[in-house]
Length: 172
Image (cartoon, rainbow, N blue to C red; front, side, top):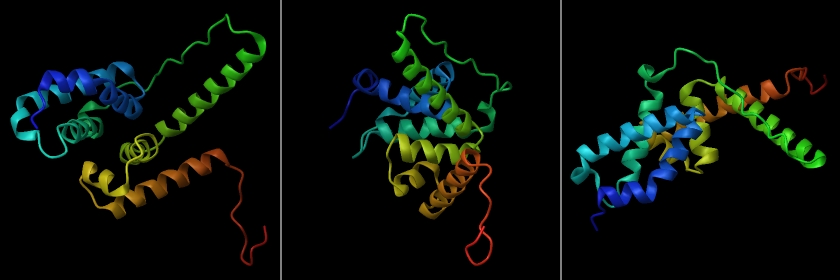
């Protein structure tokens, strides 16, 4: 069944924009990546609509643009969202804690190389299996697992920096 381009954009653009935002953590850059991917998809529309539909093609286009060195920002400065002033005491503390945890998590993800960050987003936010991630990244499933292993290792080390390696024999 052939899906029309306009129908696809209206139905799937929110999910594609969310995917781009999870990769970039920048709404404007996510919009740019999504728009560019949709422009490229429109040019090749009749050739990309297959069994799975056009979404895998567009997601891969977004991912490739994100991984591209030409898309790297010259500045790493990022604004932090402000907390609303009108929250009641207990709720404000919970909300502040949630925002702080989210900000800390994104700060840690920002320290990862782009390919490792892409694997983490695709695996844990998009809930894709390693084989699908490998297909999107153009690598093997074992490479995806290696990227995930190294990313998790780096994130764990950042979360527990004082954890000493166990001495031989299992004693610290």
